[in-house]
Image (cartoon, rainbow, N blue to C red):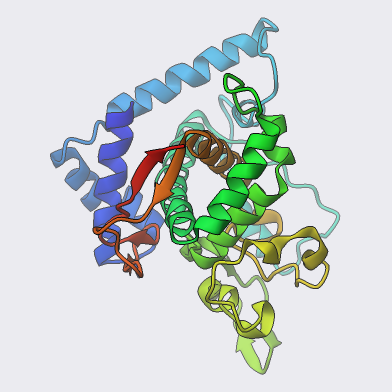
Length: 317
């Protein structure tokens, strides 16, 4: 499984880095690049077959009452239609005469479900690993912040054999601040924050035509000194402390986008980062070394990643 995802993600990201202005979904699914991936040995059929087996097993669990907790996949299964008419919801939403009280029911087909599962798997792969790289890089550069975070982690995990849990990491306030500040300085997937204008409108003196795509400049917002203060370029987790949040605009921090189309994997990504940092800092101290690049040189692709990687040292606590 890891080899499947590794080959697919690195192939896509390498190409996207060279043509970052291209629509990433066109890149993923165009016939030309599909052939390239096949030549590179990316096992699409294996991934497709694996996902179909998982979906079938979940459907069987639903039918015999052994499904357990409801997951995202279950929601997709509940929306599935085995046979039916395809509805173009986007076209319906753009109808000028669309009744606001009209209820649109969108069913998905089995092929769509497999495609959605593939996209969820890929979208959370490189993004989270890059975000974690940035987090440990900043912790290595700021040992006082690292020690403060380690102290909080040890307060919640006094027993050496105790494994971090969802409940324990969600209670750690400073850990949350560190991760949010990391994603402010390094919004790893800023290209996804875009929306299509449904009706012609004028805002800020600019006219936006119906059908036009609008991309939000996340980097400029995250580094805006009018929003974050004169130290906007610095790594300061305390700016996300609870007593500071009341003065923060709700759209000042948008690494996952905003609104009803906010990244569906946000909570999972944050949980992954919290669990990983907790396990890492309980055992190791993260240090800079002679090969650490300061400052990091970034490159744009499907994700914003360190061009030359992040090289650090680990020392047992």
